[in-house]
Length: 269
Image 1 (tube, helix red, strand yellow):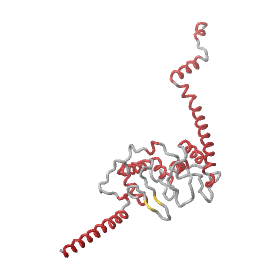
Image 2 (image 1 turned 90 degrees about the horizontal axis):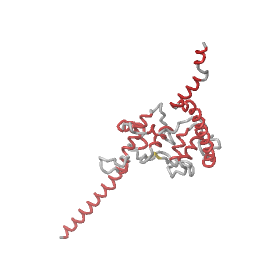
Image 3 (image 1 turned 180 degrees about the horizontal axis):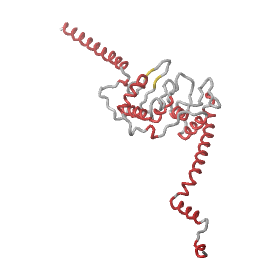
Image 4 (image 1 turned 45 degrees about the vertical axis):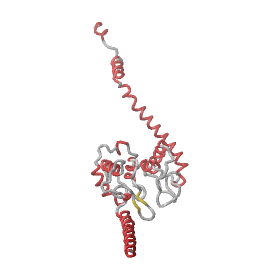
């Protein structure tokens, strides 16, 4: 009995063996790091919100209210989400220089880090569309043909068939999509800025948004060819008709003058 008792393991021996095994396989990190990482993420997000609130107080509160509730000069931002902020501020439309029927795209005055902080603060006011990741607007697996069909059905009425833009009512316009960042196109479909309707994932799934972005890039890329010849701005029958009237009528007048001049010379001779 004494011999067997001497060989019996200490009660903590199993715990020591387990700790060594976890350390050897990286299990200690797996066991303890996630909680620390989660706390770090929460702290980082809280800091971004605080910094965003400071930026908001200086650049946005005068129009949108101190708590984003909106005023007579600007709509409420409660529930617009981080995607709307990233689009409006990331394209220079906000902060607005002055009230008007439509906020035009202009030079961006905030860095991307500051935009992210503003977006974090506005997102904290109420749930809304989230800024998309690069994977969401990547066109690596997109279909240009499908995107063209979707674009002509949902977008061409305002943006023209090739995304060149067009005039709307009351002094507003549908902007050109040439050279627009794919992320901003995706966010515009998410949030529906100004006169544009929104296309959430329940209405237009993520893959369809990718297809539309791929089509816009294809028809406005540097290597895009125009099989029809002179594009005339790609604005359709208005510019084509104007060109026909001015150029065609000019040719007819020039021809008439030439005929009249040569007829007069023939009669004199």
